[in-house]
Length: 119
Image (cartoon, rainbow, N blue to C red; front, side, top):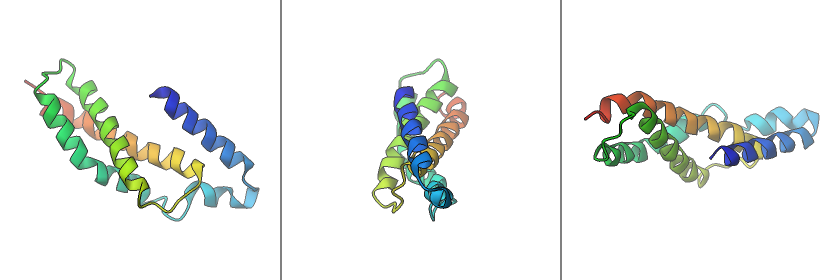
């Protein structure tokens, strides 16, 4: 997972660096920078609920870490779903803002984990 995130960050940084100076911020932020991470989070919440429900039966011993892992998976599912409707094409945008949305979902999972996954 870390290798994929690092590869996306490297490709995004290279893409951003090769973009002409006047278009860099437009490429990084696009036109939906304020909406994208929240949209990924919103699209991810049904998957997060389902994953937490499924994980509850597994009786995790570290509920915060299990919730974070479920959140990351749900965030990735949500990001994949959101990508079908997103019109942004810059790799720097995708690497930065999709990752932020996935991490936000992971944090939500970590916050919910101790409450939802206790047994």
